[in-house]
Image (cartoon, rainbow, N blue to C red; front, side):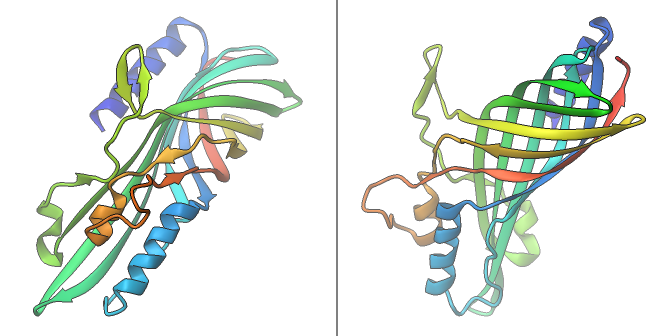
Length: 231
């Protein structure tokens, strides 16, 4: 959250100094992470005695901010922080237990578009981090437990630094009414994301015989923004 506040401040200063438009809003989209949901399905089958099954991941949502240049043809830089979560409940020797999992998709989106009579059409190239976290413990005290990273091996190297980067492309159409903008988007053509560590956290062993699970987190949805300043 501290990093998100810093990004807001940085983009706001950039918008003021560059006479650009500052955008802040919320976005949510439907997704179908096939490999991740396959793991959840197997987990539910193997743990049929759970008092509450772990539901599939089908929706990402979260805040988004950005800046956009003025003019009918524009460039924009957006930061999107989407989150999805799920959990299961089970009994362990009379103790109510819970297993929680959350997935973050934090991306910087470099885009462009064109305005026509209040409408805008465009696209962006998105890159950032996809992170998975999990924790397990007694239901009454689970909020006090730390989160464990679920996929930890960083195979991509950027400027000599090993990181786990996520790439995708977004296409959108939007309508602006006053200071509000409603955007319909589709984030597609995503690169595969490795999810090593997920098997071991869910099952205590690997299910893919040493092969790392890979996922493409595509999503399609809607975003609503408030526009501050600019033209």
